[in-house]
Length: 317
Image (tube, rainbow, N blue to C red; front, side, top):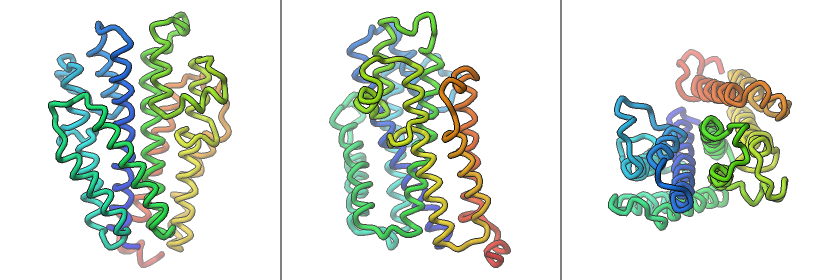
């Protein structure tokens, strides 16, 4: 597969996953605004912005809830915003129009035009956020149903699950930094925040089935980091990512694939052999930062192997 095709499919998938994740987190945040007091509203949105990848700036103290929400929804210059993610996903899909199915293009194009017609004045629109989530889910289903599950499809899978692992790690890290205070772990004022974290990862019902409705930070961390079969856990994402990378190597038949497969396998092993007690005693923040570092290594190795490799390496493959 041409490197430009692999690159576009990979980033198309990452941007769509980012848009869906952002829409879900913002929707939960808007719901929480109705439940909690308004005295910390701006600070809550600053935390949400950081957890969604917004870069710190000198005027961060001047951020307000409404300005942050509008930026995360509609600001095309903000790489973390929903509009920017959908626009970038569509542009990447346009560049490889011949590699994806007509149904995939039509769905993504429909989502793109819906976003372009959206109104910044309706910054708390549940309908807009719901359309993003449903549109991204529909695209994923159409992709799985209409595209050959070969090398290109595997790049789409790899992009989706790498983005998901990064997004959940960042969200979890920010949430525990803010709310995991042992002396107040069961306080009423933070109970809703833990529920919100689970809902932000589509995990509340699944968590209750695994642990009942007894919401405890340690169990939440265990579920979102280490659960082997929940689709939004970091471990599940790492295993799906490794599978996609191995399939890409098999399809491409490249001798250079061993390095990226080894790095992806290390990430999967880190999660597969971890225990929550050891993670919490050693510090969840340090553990999640290590996972993010390894995710960055997977991305770098994937690029060096299949996208930005020198011509000499291609001739040796």
